[in-house]
Length: 317
Image 1: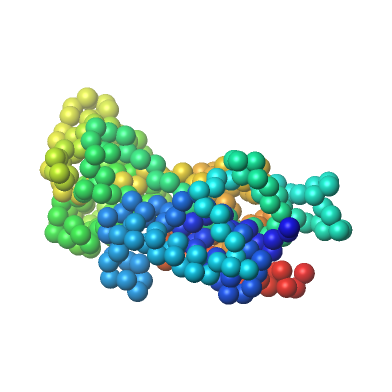
Image 2: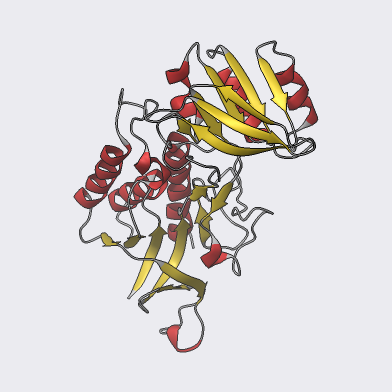
């Protein structure tokens, strides 16, 4: 069998695309290892539009249920499956004069043919390596200022990182936090100079460079952070109630690295007008792409945009 579309990924992007694909009667195979994306570990999400508050587990279940409610003749769902490779179909696979197809191979050795692909596999946050960081994750230590920042109104907080994402998070937090301390491991920031200059003008922020984070303090919740000056060796303990980590993401794109162009950190390069990659027949949406902002709502919208374009591509071939 040859599918019109194979969607890879069970987060907001993949789920949104699956619902739209089913409604448009595209012969679609939806493959995911798990549901919910990065947000599945969040205790509470306050910015999923239309829902005042929802846990990551609830969001994952809602996405799953919405997709399964649309499963049927047009939409086939396979859960708990990892993709091993994606390639252009060649040789005996191209029957009945069909060309321009792709072959999806799973870790279990199953193979599927499709006319088009939507990659929506998201990314994982690069985790902070320091004593107690794992223990206090989602207990004051978080990886999303947009999601959790308002919970720390009038609090002293830390942002870990030195790139644009770290400075953008700091800028958000300055709107409602008492103070923000930005800690960076190197002696120069990676963020754009104009962004650095603008954010550091705020009297509520302090930046400390060339440090190593040693420990997160706290029993049930974050109470402080310990860091060391890498030049002098001096250790400092700072009392804070929130720590926002922005030290990069690890896109889940290894299975397509030999097929579609990636940027320097492994995100799929796409045209933001339609989510197309540089390879005809392959689209991508969500956190695995090189778009400027990554949020659940943005991912879902980008996937819908991709699906609309895929539908047109299939029916105007």
